[in-house]
Structures are given as C-alpha cells and as structure tokens.
Length: 179
Image 1 (tube, rainbow, N blue to C red):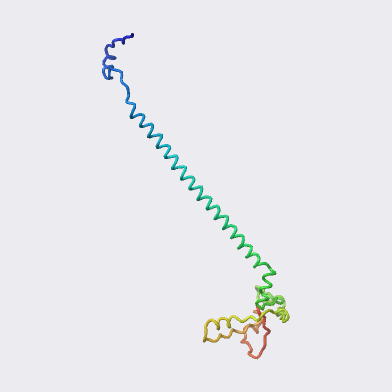
Image 2: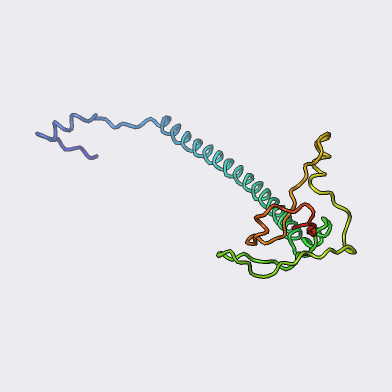
C-alpha cells in the first residue's frame, strides 16, 4: 500500500482547500442530462425533417402550377400569332368590308406632295356581309337618339389649296371604306 507523502508549507495550505476523501459524482443527473440532449436532438431533427418535406411538397405544387401557367401562356401566344398572321388579318378585314388601299401620296417636310394618291378599288364580288357603320351601332345601343352625321372626308392632299377651302356640298367624293 502506498501512502501519500505529507505536504509541507505552501502545498499543504493548497491541499486543505480541496476535500480530502475520494468523491464520486452523482450519476443520475448526468445520465438525465444526456438523455434530455439526445431526445431534444431527435425531436429537433423530426421537426426539421417535417418542415423540409412540407416545403418540398409546396415546391412541387408550385412547379406544377408554373408548368400549367406556362402551357396556358404558350397557347394564348399561339392564338395571338394566328390572329395577327397576315392572311388572318386580310380575311377579317374583308369580313368587315375593308378593301386594299390605293397608291398613297406622301407629304414632304417642306409641304410638297410626293406621289399621286389613287382611291381604293371597290370589290363588289368579294364583299362579305354588310357591315353597319359605327354610328348605326351607337344608335342601336342608345335608343331614341339618332346617329350624328360624320364629317365628310376630304381626299385632297393636305398641301393643296382646296384642302383649306370649305367643302363643296354638291361635289361627290369616292368612298373608301376601311381607310
């Protein structure tokens, strides 16, 4: 058996500060602390995993919604493209009673007219159903008030002297629908 050596002086004074006998720590609080930490960690992982899976489900729903909206946008864009195609515009214009315009004339910045305008040719054989003018449509919507006469359209170039003069009520001007 070994015996502890006796301490003297300063070492003896320090040794008196510590308890002399062998001491064992209580195991119950330590085991309880470890079990609580492990249980709390497991519960935390379970909550985190649930939140992640919920976010994953929500993200899948949003991806599905995005795909549906993208498909709808593409279908609408195809509709717009088909309505704005030149042949569709021409067919719709003919249905409305419009005819291709004649040769245009251009007004230069100095006031001179470049080119000779020609009126649009009437195409009686290709005309579709009769289309009522906008004044008649407004009259049918507001019952009781007759349509107001539209101002006569002048086919004279803007730079000519006849344009500034008052229109002659006896003169006939060719009608150009759709212009």
